[in-house]
Length: 211
Picture (cartoon, rainbow, N blue to C red):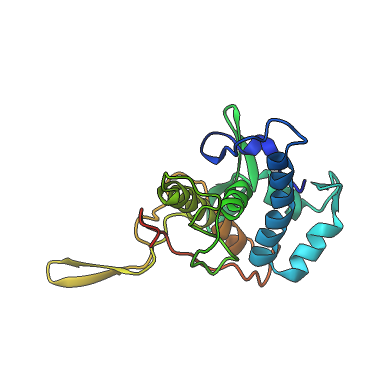
């Protein structure tokens, strides 16, 4: 498996019938991890950077002597920009007793979905092998969590507000980041010298109807 494993797929991202390592569900998930983690990195980093990353990857894991930019990308780091300290948690990190990764959300969505309007590869909303219960609200929730990890709370469209007859246009909506933690996209853009010409673009949030 590539960079993450089945331990990331619990709680909201739980995949049924994967406890047995040789079960069909477990093997399918392992294949999805390899396929969609690769797709996510290609789509967000571009072919040149992704090829460099792959050079420092052995047996599905980043080498411990990889360049610092790749260690920072995966394991997180703090950095100074314009006199302010920011923290990037990493493409994978531990939150209490749980393993968290934006890549796990991406894998989960593609593992269970078929069609989705997104500029970042094929992310889907309709669950395959659907039961009588509508899976759309759950997948939308997972998707919106993915988007927030990916880009923060940037809005789809500018918000216009009127104060004392004056029009204010807010292009970032609720994205006032006072926590000091940054999204994946902000980290890439803030560290352009290490990650030049990335093709990653902003995505749109979805409502509970998958629209």
